[in-house]
Length: 122
Image 1: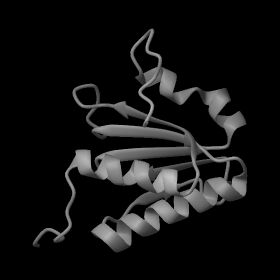
Image 2: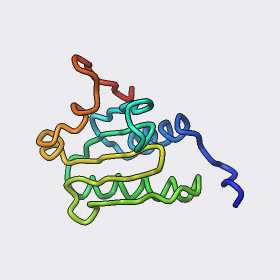
Image 3: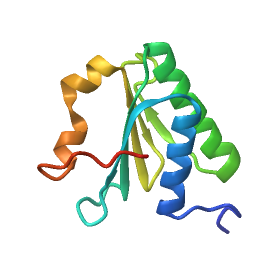
Image 4: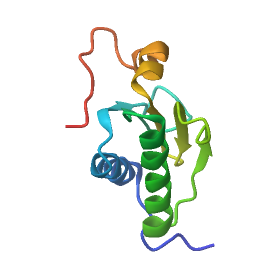
């Protein structure tokens, strides 16, 4: 099967993911480089939405954009609850949280180097 004409490498995909999150007003976007640390993906992105509705909307738009623009089918978990949505886009794993849920799990702290101030998207 031939690759989709707009197939993205992981660096292009992370930029597209970040742009989508920014377009939909996701907050506190953090990208974490997993290359050489994990075989699950090259990048992890953690972002917040202000409400369950916004978390669901941000996630839906990201999945829709990746499918329509690049032919990437994503696996999605947690969209119905709206507290934490996981989007598996292959080389990029995206977590979109409500702020309280993100604070509780502190997922990015597990993956970022000790003493790191963060790898913010900007």
